[in-house]
Image 1 (tube, rainbow, N blue to C red):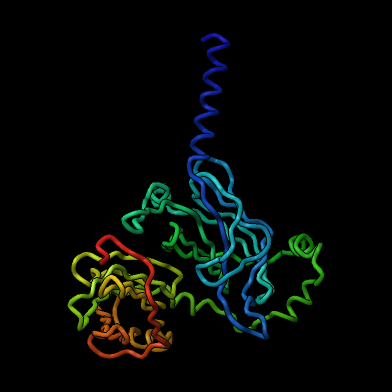
Image 2: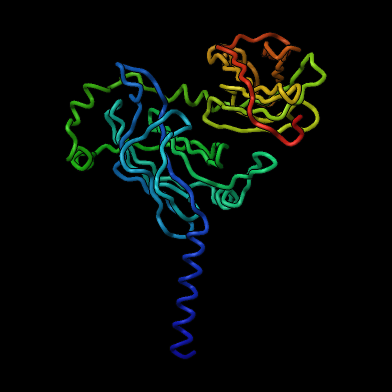
Length: 332
């Protein structure tokens, strides 16, 4: 093998490696639970000292600089594009409301992540979504949940546990070096002695249920159900000819959204906002494998939307019906 051949092979390897890394482009983002406390709804915000995301290709991706934002499962911020197949995380962060530094060092399920990069989620007849990002959620007591994002779809990757860093004086100096407040000031302002991850672990419980619709108008055409779940997941189901989803293992819905039509001038979107206390009380004695059924009833005049659980009416926080603007395959 002559020198020129070796140089050509070297550049081909470099080019292929670069293409493999850049083939997958996605966003990283962070979030935390949203809770109003002492006038501060971002009381559960954490600040990052290190935010490395490990990739199969060997190039390190990163979390955004600064602190977490948004609400559980939804960062509401974007970051510069990251590249490669994410297979783990090495993150150090400070939770001021606990006055603790945590270290998250974890691997992600390798085969699941390799598959995730090429998975496509169907949105409608005109649009599909590929892998678009990872969202890291930081709850009390070192609880970290990671979601895979595909455009409007969010699917939980898993729950991971960060460990408390006991000897943290160097980290304290590094983090607070350019802050206007010192560590004691942050602790005085934000400390929550009863901070617990129990609520967000409760949100992750999964049950087997389906959504079924009944209506009094034979002209009604149902096009989609959208689930926004308490555990931060979001899923959209486009309807087959029958207005019912299959039984599936899911976290409980926080918001149920549906689109329907009864004529070419009557298009609607309905939102049902469930009551957290009521829904978890109803499900507390159900086993994961037990089949439950939500039923949505729409009045003939499209003015009333009601929710039932196993044929019993269920109290919800609110119901809203809007004029719809989206047209689907099969619209009037």
